[in-house]
Each structure stands twice: as C-alpha cells, then as structure tokens.
Image (cartoon, rainbow, N blue to C red; front, side, top):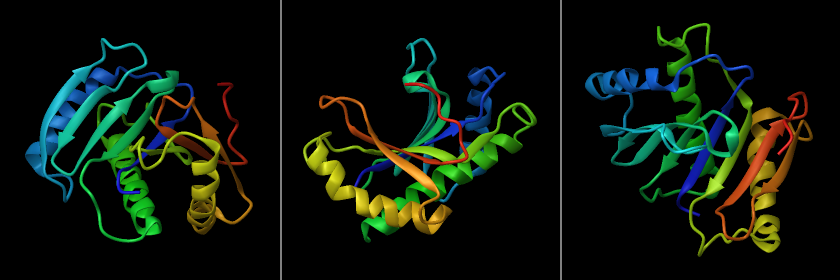
Length: 183
C-alpha cells in the first residue's frame, strides 16, 4: 500500500468558515511550513461534502475536507514512499496531526477549531491494490490494529470498514472514549 491518506476529524461543534484556511495555506507555502514542497491552494467549497480548501503539494495534498459531512484535515500522500506499511501509516498520521496542530494555532482558528487525534479515517487510495471489500479489510486489519495499538493502546479503540465497494477503502479508527456520530 503506497498511497495512504489520513483524515483527522474536527471536534464538534465547529464554528468556523473554512474559507479562512485559504490565506493560512498561502502563508504555509510562503513560510515553507512543512518539509514537503507546497505549491498552490484550491477552493472547492462549492462542492457539497467535498474537499473544501486544498493545499496542493508535490508529495502530498492537505485539505480542510468535509467529505461525509464531517469536517477534518485530510492528508493525501501522492508519491510512493519506501518503508513498511507501519512506517507509511506513521508518516501519513504524523503529517496529518502536525497540520492539525498548526491549524489550531493559526490566529484565524485559535480557540475555534480543535481536532481529535483519536478520531480518524485511514483511506487506501488505490482501488486496484486495495479494493473496498471484506477480504482486503481483513488483510489490512492486523496492520491497522498494530499501528493504532502502538499509538493509543491495544484494545482502547474501534476499527470499522466504511463505504461501499465503488469507493476507496476507508477504515474508521476511534478511541472508545470518542462518541461516534451516526453515519
């Protein structure tokens, strides 16, 4: 699995205008806020439950994503990455979490936006290598249990396959202390 995406969900209720991310993301490009090459900002707020506001990079994209009707920060790794699946999961999760913390600290969002690092989705962005079916989920589940167990503690979280076969394989991972919204 090369293209692993991680979406860390915002805590409810959210009282922000995600359009405020546009100047923030432009600053991140100018300030070279990440080790990755960041190149542009795209505004997709007009798309219902869509990608929102995106920060386009060479290696990865970041977005204030509203897919599924839940706001979160989505880290979308585009380039292949060497290493084990555990290393790729760690890289994607850590990159998403670092961006969440930066957004929370931005003046536009300070005290208004809070992400929950124990409430996320892992998206396998390759329908050919990781079809959204039970067999693929059962194959990847031990890797996800190992990763989130090392992160949050074994047995402290729930995993669940999301979506339908035509969609990318998405796995929800949440600490048991997180109250999960109905989907």
